[in-house]
Image (tube, rainbow, N blue to C red):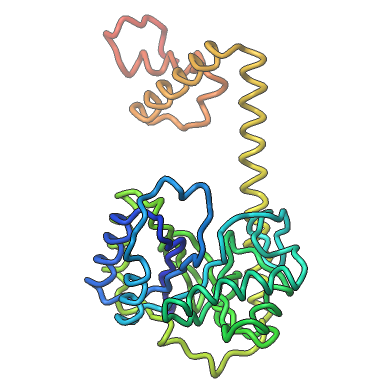
Length: 314
């Protein structure tokens, strides 16, 4: 039976307070205790427009008191490296690619901020999921953290004195893993995201775990299945990204070939003809390139007799 964990990213003094309150109320209603990733000294320019919460650290302490697990989510959440490290979900990082001393300083200063507010984080996960061996060594030398929330795997495994709790998806869904972590960014969530998450929790309430319920005593190193899952995940992302790039190149070439107005007109026609195909139950492959084939037009005329189309029936 699969077990699920909710992870919330990008808790900071400047955040979308209303959405964080909304997710908190929802999780409290179902007694789900998430992993909350706190940015100790956020300087991310993309979060500057949010209202500053003067009581932020009091809120973090209240999360901890109610059983939420507090994680160190980087230091400043600013990307200053193009290295994907050990978990290359993105080719950007706050940690991966930097020398050990640089990473030790970031960890040391981040931990100091937490301790200044009476909090000792027990878990780490880096912005954009990217870290390297120096990150692990820096954590080992500058903190008591020995748990990482990241990488794709079937279950908890141990590597270089750290326990890794896999994080495989950005939304709640059934996955073929023993433990699945769903990573949400409340600042960016839309209303439909809240609705879908709540429905999933309602259906699978007994399968959700808090970090304090995880068993780290029986964890071993990565299994063959873990390696396959990890490589499959990165292969999927690579194909997905290449597919997006190919689609964009195809669109640009089409605009260059036919012109912007003709491309828009053709796209509208394609949608219209697809609706007709659904109405008359024709297969989608008939829609190519943008005009219905003559025999389909004739068939539609036969079906819709009296509609002004005089083509013969074959």
